[in-house]
Image 1: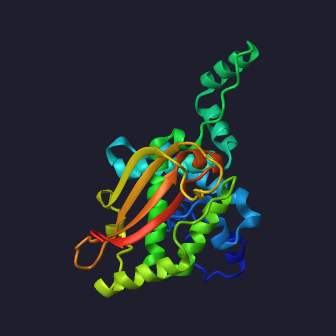
Image 2: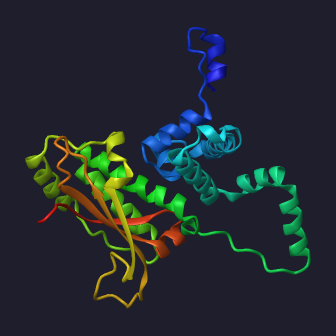
Image 3: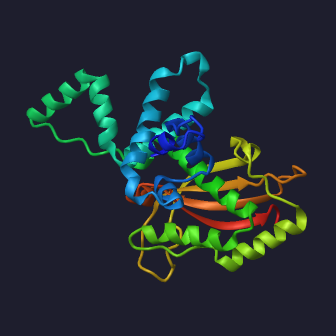
Length: 272
């Protein structure tokens, strides 16, 4: 569309949109595919966006030399690949068929021999990519907290809770978020939401089993599920690191909905 527009408006910059700029925007905003579509109102262009993301993924996989790679880039590549796979695995399968025809032929031979069809990998099956998704989900909440958007924070958790079957209850209300943010801003002037807020040592993830979060105790027994207990330390100007956002991620429910089923349980000062 930009190229067509530029034909009759020559003063428009020649720098066309590229897959890498779209991926960068999506990653820096810490958005899922669905959130990105909703934010830019791209409902009628989902397929185009997915192709862009796939092009960027293939380029990163094939053209970045080994000496230029690092752990952060590898995390982005894993996250991007899993985002595409969970949205529409056919695009990656199409590419893999071109890059590794022998593997495709072997899979076809197994199917012809009556071997059972492999079940698609759940979202938690790629733990590295899933950890990046969880980190992004927490950073999204940091961004909202930095803008004092306490209503949106409550709405974000409510939207996630409603995706699961049966639906969950949120653990923090809008009033809880408002009170917590008021307490934070009594101590500090702002919440860091740049690169310093995304460093891995500010995020703690601990695996454990337990009842799923958001299920009323009076409800039916839901058994024990795989959980991650998450603690995100906030980057304050004084670097006291004395405030955290805590959350639970239900891994089984995440497999069900295809993205982290994460509910925040507290925003508090350490020691309180």
